[in-house]
Length: 273
Image (cartoon, rainbow, N blue to C red; front, side, top):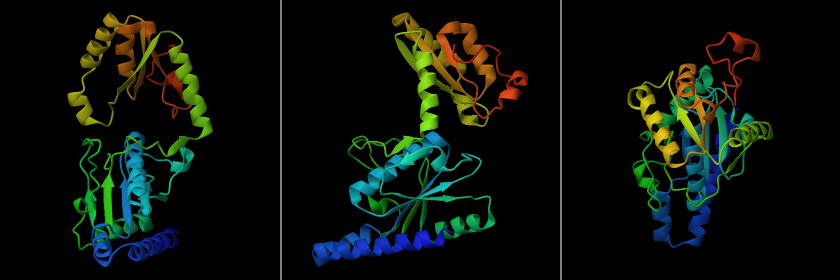
């Protein structure tokens, strides 16, 4: 099912190259064909937040360089839901969903990475505004006919470009309701994300005591501050509740069935306030 989509993109890239050749001198045409390849593919990795960062960068890249860009959205353990169930995309990007657990999709990905010069970007590396990473030779040798990168981070400066995605109405309604509930009890609301469970690096270098210290400092300077805690560890909820009490808002993971929450390790207090 992915084959016609990719062929259409290749044709789009070739058409783009021909259009450039009619608008520029021969020398500039050769330079553009050499440096700015016919097809630029971005394989997203990581969870939702990391993918949105990379997706926004791909959108900025497509607009800035006027190039056809294919974005690969793997439905896997890191994020096991299709993009269409999360947001609407308003972008010239071509979004292709794959299931690496399926043998055909897995081999298609491996073959594409090998043929199209795969380049894995480092994790969480910053982008300096005005100095994008995406100078094309950075990703692949100049003689390669295509470029394919794997990333969970920004690779193009998108600070001046509006986000190309909008949450689906159902999710946006839930988010707005929860934010309104959390904001109702203070003049300031600060979000706290404490990731545990599967993230060994976060557990080693992002200690709970550091969060609590920073939050207490904030309260000394701004006593009307409240906090919205997002975490995958119910033990962390208990630790923060002991210190901050009603100044803390939190919600259990939506993936927990309502019938199982009474037997889950999450605190019994009503979520929110």
